[in-house]
Amino acid sequence: MSNPTTTRPEKLFVSWTEYHQLIEQLALQIHRSEWQFNQIVALARGGLRVGDVLSRMFDVPLAVWFVSSYREHAGTTQGALQIGGSIASANPVLGDRVLLVDDLIDTGATLQHVLPVLPQRLPHLREVRSAVLWTKAHAPIRADYVAQALPGNPWIVQPFEVYDAAELSQPVQSGESNRKK
Image (cartoon, rainbow, N blue to C red; front, side):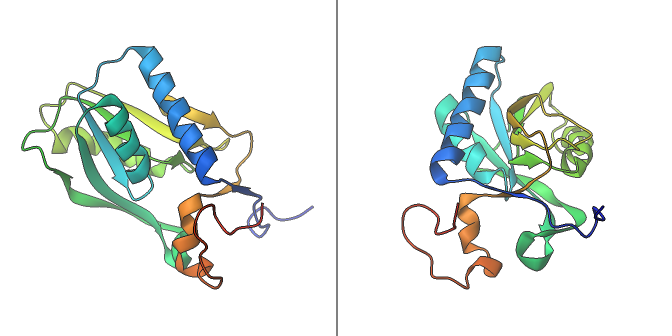
């Protein structure tokens, strides 16, 4: 039997088409809930693209909060969680019913640490719900909206990761990812 700490996890390669389909599934789930929110706060970097698309689809303002834990080894190793000091938005006043968006829940650390801090940053906040594309099986916390609950804990290789330093050993091709499926 192999040691789980040394075994290389399986990988889930996601194409741009699949990525956008997941965002659309997430949007449909949010829409069907009939919850009325007036602000999206995207956790950057992972939630930035998801938040942008949802902001356009629901026609609500987008704010960005920089949160980082996967910085080492071209974003493949989780380190200490760093939470940015402010939430950036073009609007002078952020909404009071916030959809907090990220790409995935892996260990749950980001959501567990950010949710209690959000009311401190937005004292006028009345309600917050969370949305992610993926939740891994081992995650101890769940988002309110999840496009895909994974039965295992694969390393998710998102389509834009071809631009990460570790992946630049091969030339980037236009269109779909140059990764083997």
